[in-house]
Image (cartoon, rainbow, N blue to C red; front, side, top):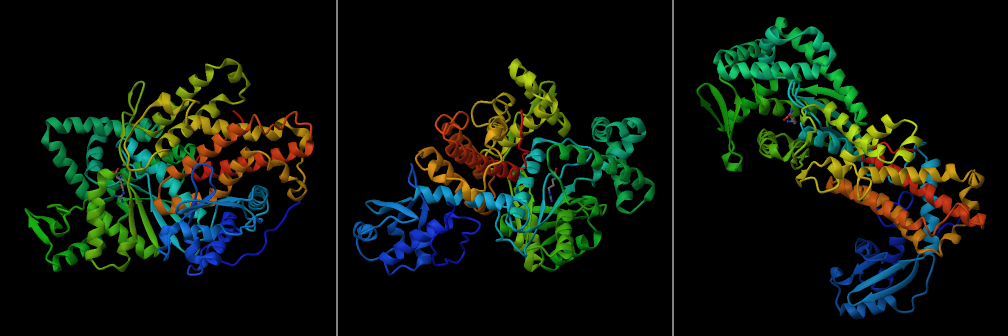
Length: 595
Ligand code: ARG
């Protein structure tokens, strides 16, 4: 019953072996270029868009700027149309030509492809939705990048969530990816902590919870500094010693850093986030900082302000910025300039992405501009992926300052939520784990649901509800799909795809709706790569979850007398689960099998 499609011309840039809808679009494009011979098949292809309101594909003829009335052109496309394996019908509405695909072959082809690329993929790993457009190219991507001894605020959380999505996305598109966490592990605040540690530090507290303890020490010395100017001066002196490589201060600092990183690794792990490298501001060498200042000096852009070095970027509407303090110590901006150069020398990337809050737009624009002024040909390979603010994130006890507080709060709010349904709660095997995973999913989905640049307000109740487009709803949809196999053991193992009669699905509009959505997943991935927006993937996941939830009543498996029908339906759900799972994993979410 498996069928292969009739052969088609190849359109450059398309790959039906990873995205079967490319074949259907090619068939549409061929029809267009046959009927409107001024159009090449490639030109025609570029005009084939997804349709609206139940229409599979639509072509807006005016975009081709062909001579003649659009209405007449449309008629030529429609004339003598015979349905085939690709297209079932063509209609037109003034200048728009609408194409409906052949439902039977659409469903067959989409499910076959998902199955093959999930269970029989040439790479040995599930690969439906992936592509190889990035093959041979290297991405360096930096995200999360919290400051040791300061709070891990929502800005860092957003960078973590969006950044890990992007790292997954580039890998999915065939790029070699080096992900890094660029810690704020250098700067005067470490002088502050060093001076405060003598007074407020405790080895024991430090080993128990390094992140929290260093933060506490920092808060205390900062308070002292408010009333006593000597504290800051002392801190600056200690930092100067660190910059000069004084081992007696560096030894402590190194321990603080190591302990903080181990703690962070645990927490990132709970978030399903990882990094290939932990680096930090401390690792940036002096050499390039000096060279940068020299080069900018030659260009006449450096001025001296009481011993500090100032760069003037007014011509580029980027203001003035300090590059070196009067005591010779480096600052954030200079470290970023030199850090980028070192990364180039090490990785020779094709692209480098910084996932940093839009509050630092100016900072990133400044250092990108400085690299351009330094004439680095790779300077235009840097990209800032920014995002808006999150308002009002606090736990019930007060403002959250640490990542583990956020994770704990999500788990406990979720746990309470689940307890409200006692019967269901009692059937959950590991409620602690489930509530943590679902809670984290809630945070991630809320964070990625809208365009990055939008601000949003943190709302525990809304994000952790099972109603509406929330993380818990998505997990629930995945769990329900997964349970289909468990609940229908008599249908297992499913026969080979070629033995499953998918034509039995074609009678239902629901199966077709699901199939075309599933077929669009490879396009969703490609679009996300262009826009760097996770929201498109989130929207896709919800559209799929909704299409499935409207199908439950009609596409019944349990109790269906016709076993061939029941098997075909079950297979549809299994494919839907695999694609929904892939989309969730792309979003760095661990899809649950039970809850
Ligand atoms: N640690 C910085 C902060 O918390 C963010 C670092 C962003 N990355 C960079 N290369 N500047 O504000």
